[in-house]
Image: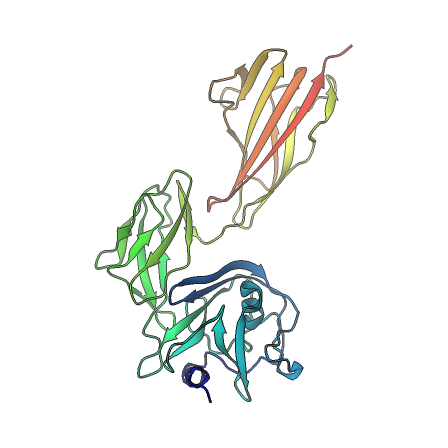
Length: 351
């Protein structure tokens, strides 16, 4: 048996990282998949698992479900991984994107939600929200990994200069402070103290924080905005405008007074609006604080908060006067993800 396969098999036997396929498939789920090699990340993806079976050796009797960790790995890598099938064990992952262990003590291992998986890539059925990590483990005498996954713990309080803590995770998910780790992605890299803490200054827009330490597995990215930090969520809210379409022409009598739409995000969303009116050479912008139109400022029309409701609505003080309008809508979630829409419409004067 080749040395690398033997190493993977020994690792699987020791930590049940690559065990038998599950008997029953789960429903498709939205998950995050990350693959870390010795020289950097090989894959990072937010995806929805499918029901398409995964076969790596051409034998359909060895198929893994598409809803398993193997199915998620197949999607995240575009199928760029190899595995050897062992009766009673399932697939042992030999290589990912051409990267394989350099000795029998190195093998690919599976972790889910910051702990070592108790089943293997075929046997681990995934659920909504699962964080999947596959990395090249350097095993010690007890076959546990000497290179530990890192994580970033962020405060719930919003801050542009949050104090984060970097931790290492054990096989059972227990966290311990990671002293001497480096947190990158803010204005400058910061090294953690003895308790694993570091005060990070966020960038003006969105910062992507990652923790690294020599000999360990980098953390998953944590995405922060200036006033919010603490999630790996990178999906912006869905945003619609209901009663105004791009290019629409209204009569003076039919001009909208209420602006309506939807903003949907699992964590909730805030909707901001920006409204500009032009009539000939005149330009005015709506000020949400004073609820009136004023001459357009040099830096453009101001944004104003309209709603924090899923089905949002903003009532203008009166119907819109004739002119050419540009309406901007911006939805943002607590994790700094945003989606923007812009429509242009006209209100015609009564004849």
